[in-house]
Image 1 (cartoon, rainbow, N blue to C red):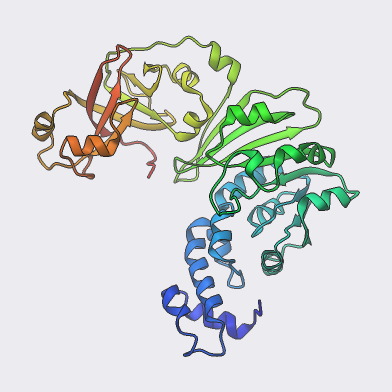
Image 2: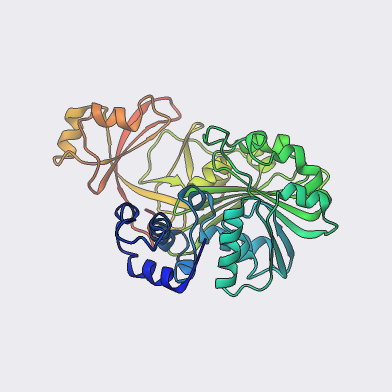
Length: 402
């Protein structure tokens, strides 16, 4: 990477150009590495949404597409920095592009960044300097090898293992990731007071807890109601796995829905089920569903669940602070294209399916509907095992999820 003022100025002047078109203009600009220029323009376009504060730095260099896709977003990196690294000495042993190291360095005493890919390491090191971050120490080596050889002991080790196999396919189980968490957990715990493991949003939490030892807490982290990360915090001092699970959704406005529960409490709760549809339907955010707080959310917000396996809830009076989408029920309908056509003359609605024998696409086809409009058709199974359709409107709230 030969970063200089001429290259920087050229990239800044072409930031709004099409990256593919730029990559094909090597003959027009023989003095420039146009593949690299296109990579920077494409990276900047992504960064404006994924890491907006870093995109403001004109000297920030972006790696190839796959590395950009795999890195943490700014909003999740800030969350982890605020919760886990404040005042600590941190080792980020799978450093990648260094987004987590960047934001942890703002709250930590010091950060040791470790990345074995030389290109990524050099880009991250350049970016740390461009951002004037003086408390990050860089090492270009394998993170596990580094821990084996170092005499240092850290307050926190952060590990985000690569979740692709040799064929480039996505994986989620710890044993299929690189490095293998299960084979190295003893080493990790011997080198730090706390170990923070970032895992795939697709991971089976129960399976992960059965495989790991010394888990202090689990956090399911979503952004704009899309699950991004499942975090496991481990400590050598924890003799048994804690069953505390925190379900966080960072909303569009930057505020959070935040629900913490215990698995034992969830399992022991007795909650009401009903086949009677109230005036409102509640669809919990994905963090709550991924975490498995199905009964806890009903208990906390005093809503009735519609079926053991239908994770929708209902009430007669509106619960405005419910952590998820709220719908006002207009009408209960039969599963009939003719009946639906009478209620939706425009032939448009958003389809939501919960515990129902047809997929949303299949139901849309059966009802002759197109996606769109302001109304929702919610298909579900009630606790009396009857299938039904609900015509609903989305209740306006102080915030909206996309």
